[in-house]
Each structure stands twice: as structure tokens, then as C-alpha cells.
Image (cartoon, rainbow, N blue to C red; front, side):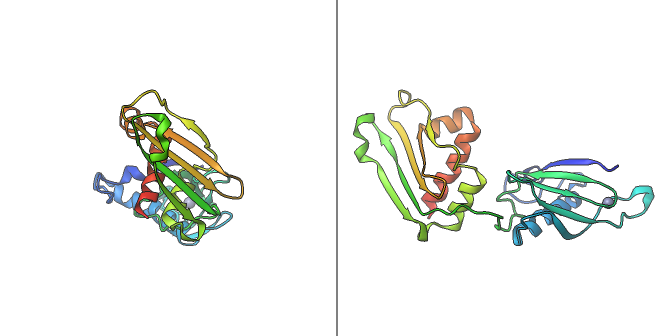
Length: 214
Ligand SMILES: [Zn+2]
């Protein structure tokens, strides 16, 4: 019976997003990174063999197994195993690392994005918001990846407290897609992001930044 590895790929990176150099981690980072790269170059719908040998050496002899890997159904986690020695694991937080080649199994079909945002002295005057409308044909791959990787499409609703913040920061996102539309209103993104580091605000921040960059 082999080990079970739970791997967060960002733990192998320094603050610049480059592979960190500490205590023998480079070899293991390279190994798991190779799994991420292979799956994001040509994303498989099911588990398949990747061109990578098992790294275990039971009884000091190299395990002859080839790694099998794929995406865990219903999540963005990568799962892998060696069919010979049963070494296995799960890789998460691999998105946007240097090993991520950008491919995904199923990207959402987005027909339109309407993004309204700005700062208001008074919630009643929301006609003053900046508005960006992206027709599906011009939505960049980075935006679609940000929406997919941050699992935004299932999170419609109103978040944050509109009575906090002076001026009030508001971000409104309407995403039209086959299961949608998804409408999200977010109050005080910057305050919430830095004060709470709440995961949903972090995810929404990534999506808003991707739209701003287009
Ligand atoms: Zn093995």
C-alpha cells in the first residue's frame, strides 16, 4: 500500500510565483508539476496514463508503474495514482501556477458579461456606475478561466453590507450562460478582501481583475 499525498501546488512557489528552493522540494514539485502540465495541455475527460514514471522505490527498486491521472468529477482537483504500488494523491490550487498550461475539460459557454462597478456616496445613485458589456465572442480566455476556476457560476446573490463603507464600493456582475444568468452583487470588495480575506471575495476579486484587464 502506497502513501496518499494531498498537494497544494502554491506551496512549492515563492512570492514571485517561481519554484521555491528549499530542502529537496524541487524534485517533488517537478513531479507533481509535470502531472498538472500534462493534464492542462490536453485535458482528459476521464483518468488516463500520463508520460511519467512512478517515483517510489519500494525495497530500493524503482516501481515500474506509470502514473494515471485526471480531474476529480465535479471539482477542479487533480487525482492521480500508480496502478502498480497504489501510491495516490490529490492536487489542488494548481490553477495559474507556472505548471498550468491553461487547458480545462469543460469551460463554461458564456454568451454575455455585464459588469457594473464603482463607488457611490449614496446607494440610490447607481446610475453613475461604470459599465462594461462583453459580448460572448470577445470574452477572453483569461476571463472564462477565472470564472471556471473560481466556481463563480453557482454563486449568484448579494454579498456584503451596503450600509458599511463611505463611499460604498459596488461590483455587479451578470453572466449569461446556458444554466444562467448568474447575477452577483458585491458590496465593499476592497474592504472585505483586506479585512477578512474571505475566500469568496478573493475569488470574485480575481474575476473582476480579469475583466478589468481585457
Ligand atoms: Zn508505483
